[in-house]
Image (tube, rainbow, N blue to C red):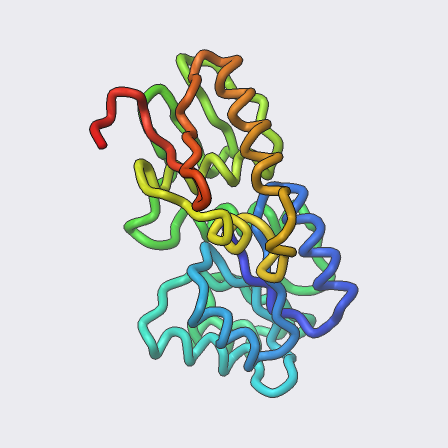
Amino acid sequence: MRVLVVEDDRKVAGFIQMGLREEGYAVDVAKDGEEATTLAHVNDYDAIMLDIMLPRKNGLQVAAELRREGRKTPILMLTARDSTEDVVRGLDAGADDYLSKPFRFDELLARLRALIRRGGSTRLERLTYGPLELNRMKHQAHTGGQVLDLTPREFQLLEHFMLHPEEVVRRTELLEKVWDMHFDPESNVVDVHVGNLRRKLREAGCSDLIQTVRGVGFCLKTDDTED
């Protein structure tokens, strides 16, 4: 799952980014309102964490603009302004929830999970393909009743493959969706993590599900799928 954090305080943004990554989320950070709207137009996010007091365009303006465009991405407002009037303004602008600073990170995670769970009728909480079943909210993958011991990054890779079964997924797409936007494209990090994921699937009895498309990327495909 991919989250956009919009926060001009570098320490706060870094704290949230690090914590979310440890929980298995892909995280982009915007430092002002203009950058936030640009990223929200380019990328498909599962949720947006949005500060109100921002340079260039405040959070209320960002939320209102996204809602006018018909974008339904769940928005969690993060701000030090916690008066009733500020809460009402944030919700009226299009926010789905409101969390005042300072906050406990476990509460932030709980609110994020709740927003993603409620957000968007087309979003699937469970994904299945062949013998695999993936619970996106619990961050668990199963095969034959066995829980796979996956790292957060391996879970994200499997999630992306299962969202695009039997499609060729390019390495550049995985770098964009699973890693940072500006990750070094020359790195072999994708192949290393896909290799580890393959090994764990093989040990669980699911061999050859992730197939290499030479010179392009990978494809989640069963042996009995017709070309």
